[in-house]
Each structure stands twice: as structure tokens, then as C-alpha cells.
Image 1 (cartoon, helix red, strand yellow):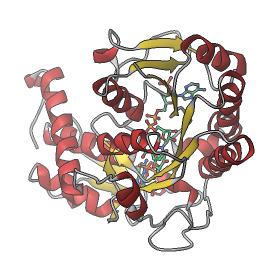
Image 2 (cartoon, protein in one colour; image 1 turned 180 degrees about the horizontal axis):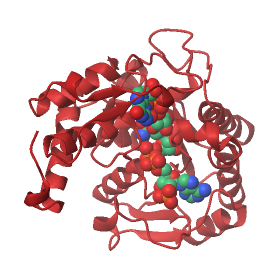
Image 3 (cartoon, rainbow, N blue to C red; image 1 turned 180 degrees about the vertical axis):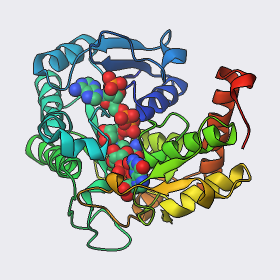
Image 4 (cartoon, rainbow, N blue to C red; image 1 turned 120 degrees about the vertical axis):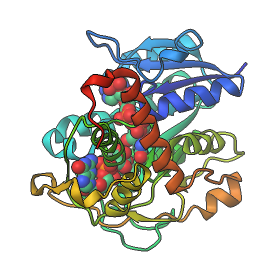
Length: 330
Ligand code: NAP
Ligand code: F7E
């Protein structure tokens, strides 16, 4: 039985990846950081089938200890401070988790079993930032626009460097935005679908957003974790762009989401200048042709299906948890 370790198992992608690896017959081990209350909302349904280990990307020896104990064949590094606006408020912490944390994990792998452990690093389309080419592909130069993007560029290159320096099987997956009903509520897709559900049920009157013009290549997280796994099953390690090849503005996202419940978004959305970022990534659109050709990967869920699925998941959640008498349908 193959063994895999996932850092960031409590996050959106960690939960989908754990499900996928279990379905592929893996023994799955997740790294969680210590906190005073458990944060297992996304993996509650899996805790009897995966093993959790306390460790932290900020603590080198804790990572080495987990790898010594488990002796996995695959390590997926999904842990990060992943919210872009926070990276301006906590730039040093973001660097410690999202950049230097990658080196700590790679060092742990190098010390424990450099030839036997394959490593996936969660790189990001935020590395392209102020895009130098449209669409963005593996060779497109990076121009990050936030401390988060800068940290991810470091994570990408240190991964490539360990591959080239030590002959380790390390890959960097350059994933464009991917979403689901498990997405954190601060990210724009989930903020919108959650807001639409609340407005529809009379639990909120408006939805405050920042830049409606920015464009993203949005896919479904469940499709993207399959690409992570495929990258570690190849004969030779390499880096891949994972994207849908389509782009949509935040405005289109909003319109699609309100359309799902038959409401006119213009009546509810308030543009709030306080939410404009110090530096924006205006346009992202990826070219996934290498992944399609080499990995045989293809996204399954379209943009309208993704939005619909998220809106209805949020509606159902509020319908389940909020008493009928507190709702006043819009
Ligand atoms: P997420 O939901 O924010 O999850 C991040 C995970 O990292 C959480 O499990 C979090 O644990 C953990 N973590 C944070 N700091 C840690 C530390 N110091 N030690 C150990 N664990 C720590 O992120 P996601 O959307 O699943 O994304 C997964 C990875 O892909 C991230 O690296 C992200 O930057 C990258 N990425 C995401 C996207 C996207 O669109 N989703 C696109 C490209 C790349 P807690 O639960 O304790 O907070
Ligand atoms: O913003 C605009 C905002 O926070 C998308 C992370 O997973 O994907 C994610 O980073 C766009 C931006 O994601 C609001 O200005 C407008 O242009 O959902 P987001 P992100 O910054 O693209 C990449 C690939 C990652 O790697 C990251 O970890 O939407 N926007 N109004 C807004 N964004 C937010 N959050 N909230 C708003 O009210």
C-alpha cells in the first residue's frame, strides 16, 4: 500500500486530495498544526480513515519526525498562508509559511529519503501577476504582484533547485484559481455564492465587493487535485500549468451567481474601494495543453456548473441551519 503525506490537509485542496488518494488505495497521513480548537470542518468525514500528525511548516524537526515515522512515497505540500490580501498585512509570516516553509519540507525529505519520496509543491498562477504573455504557460516569465505571489515564486524555484541539485523527484504544479463549496469564505467565489444565498433567504441585504473588472481562470478543486496526483505518477518529474483555458471577470461571476436564484445583482452589489488591493493581478488565463497532452488531464466542471454548485450548496446549508422564521426571502 502506497503512503502519502499531505501538508494543509485541513484546507480546501487537502480535503479533496485526501479523498482522491483514499479512493486510489493509499494510506493517507495529514499534517495539522496545533491549535486550541480543532479545525476539521472539511475533513470531519475522513478522520476515521486518515492519520493526522501534529507538525508545522515553521518547525523543521517536526516535519522530519513525521517523515521518519511514516516513510511515505509521496508528499504533497499544500500548506500555506494562501489569502492574497493577508500577505500585505503579514508579509513576513507569509514568507515564513509559503516560501521558507517549502525549503524546510524539502530539507526534511532530503534528510529522510531523497530518492524514495516524491514531492508535489503547490505553486500558483499568482506568480504570473502582471502577465508577460497571454495565455500563461510553463515558460511564461513570472512577475508577482503581492507578497504571496513573491513567496510562491520562491517556493517554485527552490523546488526546481532541489530537483536539479539532488536529483530528487520534485514537481511544481502551477495551478490557476480553483474553487468549490469547501472554499474559504474570504475568497471571491465563495464570498459571492455565500452572499447570494444569504440575500435570497433574507439574511443579508447587500454584498460588498472590490474590483469587479479583474479576470480569473476558475476551475473546480476536485478536478485540480487529480492533476496533482497525476504529476507524481510520471516517469520523470516536471512542472505543469493546470487551468481551464477560459477567463471570466468578477462581474460575470456575480451575474452568474445572482442569475442562479433569479435576482438582479445590480440591486445588491456595492463596490467598496476599501477592498481594492495595493497591486492587482488584472487578468489570468492559463494554457493547460502540456498537462492535457502529457498527463491526460482535462477539467470536468465548467464555470457555470461550478458557480451553480456553490450557490446551491450555500443555499442548502443556510436552509438546514437557519430557522424558517428568521428568513425573509428576497
Ligand atoms: P487553504 O484552504 O487556505 O488551506 C491552507 C492549508 O495550509 C490549511 O490546511 C492550513 O491549516 C495550512 N497551513 C497554513 N499554515 C500552516 C503551517 N504553518 N503549518 C502547517 N499547515 C499550515 O488553501 P487551498 O485553497 O486548499 O490551497 C492549497 C495550496 O495550493 C496552498 O499552498 C495555496 O497557496 C495553493 N494554491 C491554491 C490555489 C487555489 O485556487 N485554491 C491556486 C494555486 C495555488 P489551518 O487549517 O490550520 O489553517
Ligand atoms: O480574488 C477580486 C480580487 O481572493 C480573486 C488564492 O487561492 O487564487 C487565489 O488568489 C479576484 C481578485 O483569489 C473581492 O481583487 C473583488 O482580483 O478569490 P480571490 P486570488 O487573489 O486570485 C490564487 C491562484 C492563489 O494561489 C491564492 O492562494 O477577485 N475581488 N472583490 C475580490 N476578492 C476577494 N477575496 N474579495 C472581494 O470582495
